[in-house]
Length: 82
Image 1 (tube, helix red, strand yellow):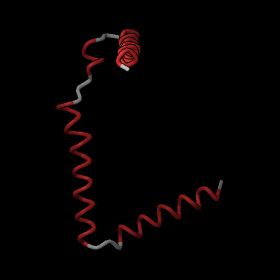
Image 2 (tube, one colour):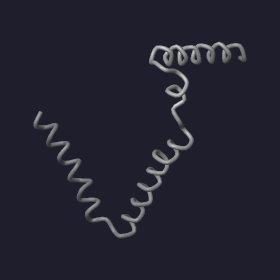
Image 3 (cartoon, rainbow, N blue to C red):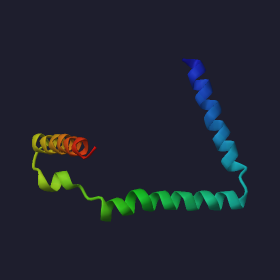
């Protein structure tokens, strides 16, 4: 178990030292990457990927039935096309 912590500690230390010794240009690139990830996962989800199931089905049973129906119908339609 201690060997796991040692490996985890070495990995964390590797990244910590790498970011600490990174050039200004490298830090700017990471800031841009983090901003882009935030936009992709937070902003786009709010506006484009709204929760369809929670809006249209009041409980988990109806949601799961809808998903199962969509999955089975999709595979039936797909099999007929080929």
